[in-house]
Each structure stands twice: as C-alpha cells, then as structure tokens.
Amino acid sequence: MTTPTDQLKSIQSRIDELEQTISDRSEQIKARTLKLKDELQDELSPAEMVRKHPFEAAGGVFLAGLILGRGIRGAFGRKKIDAPTVSPAAEPVHAKHATSGIVVEILHAGKDLALTYLKHYLDQKSKKPKT
Image (cartoon, rainbow, N blue to C red; front, side, top):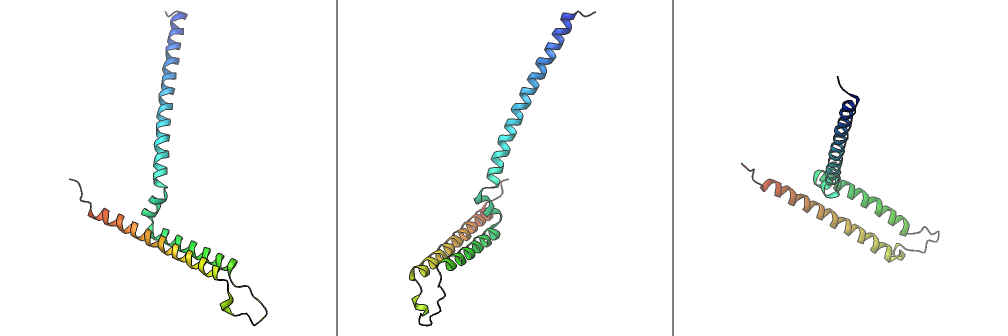
C-alpha cells in the first residue's frame, strides 16, 4: 500500500517531467521558428526572386519604367495653349532631359539585370557535379 507521501512524490516527479518536456519543446519551437524565418528571408530576397524569375522581373522593371515615364511626361509635358504661335520647340528643355535620363537609367538597370542572370546561368552550367 502506498502512502500519501509516496503519491505526492510521484505526482511531483511527474510534474517535473512535464515541465522539462514543455521546456524542451519550447526550445525546439524557437529553433524551428528562427530557421523558418531565415529560410523565408533567403527565399523572398530581391536577388533570389530575380534569380528564380528573371523574365518576370525584367518585365516588371520595364512596365514600371513605362508607367513612370508616362507620369513624368504628363507632369512636365507640354501644356496645351490655345495660341497657335507656340511651337513644339518651345517645350521645356528640362522635361526632355529628365525623361531621357530616366529612360537611360531603366535601360542600364535592364542591362545589369540581364548580365547578372547570364552570369548566374553560366555559373550553374559550368559547375561540375560532385561524385
């Protein structure tokens, strides 16, 4: 026959085991969470997205450039004037330079993106499988 003291010791030891199990599981969950966070950051980084989807990224950059160019052209473009004496040559020079500068920057970004993708592609092709 067990005494009440033995039962209390048994219950206390079971509580201690459960607390240890909870502590261990908590540490495991924290470690998994940190690992998942790191994996998501790596997976969703801009460089990784461009590497996985180069054509979509180039298309997005191109589309953003078109929209931005249209917006700038609309903001700085020619104002409609009823007087027929104003010629197209009277258009503000700074608007033309701003638009052409943005177009050049977009072309440079597209070139850099294409070269980065090509370099990555060639690096992957040139790697020999380890045996």
